[in-house]
Length: 220
Image 1 (tube, rainbow, N blue to C red):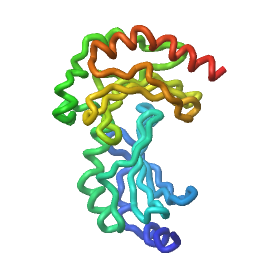
Image 2 (image 1 turned 120 degrees about the vertical axis):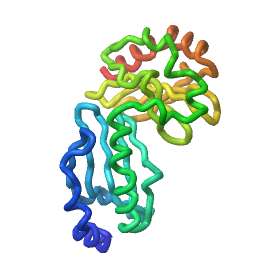
Image 3 (image 1 turned 90 degrees about the vertical axis):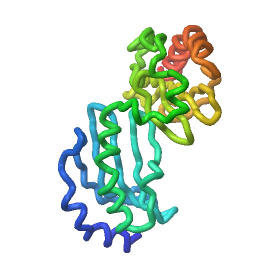
Image 4 (image 1 turned 135 degrees about the horizontal axis):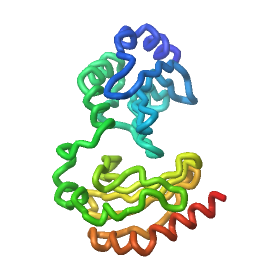
């Protein structure tokens, strides 16, 4: 790790980074967090989105960690084993990636997802903006791609308690499924498992409010 820190500290690319890019503000970190060394972050506090470049001692790779609300994942397109390759990836892709984080672009949706007509789903307009203290953070009209072929299409979050309910659609399984986090601890739920939008609509009508009420009670 010491050699990597020395290499990163003298990395001229860091001196050229703009303080603002696509609405994201630069934070130079250069700090060790466990087995990882955080290099820099572009953060959009109002949108609750960030893009962090780091080195992972366990895997011996440079990585990019993306955060959208309470959802975090590694952007595999930036994984590389050396600083020169990382610089090229960042030069070629970072601004475009930040632009995509800052705004929803329908043309970026894959064909399988677009064919499901989730963005055009009329029921989405009926989803309450607030329920039991949870905010509708992600809507079906503006989903985002997560990991392993899954898109987050609904996210009700309470950021103060770091708790939320997420509904995903997986293009490989052609299935809707949900996740709950209680103070960031994952909880199992099958209340919103569905194969079609009409089925998901029925499950949301029957289960959304009770599920969030139960989650609120667990937080009290």
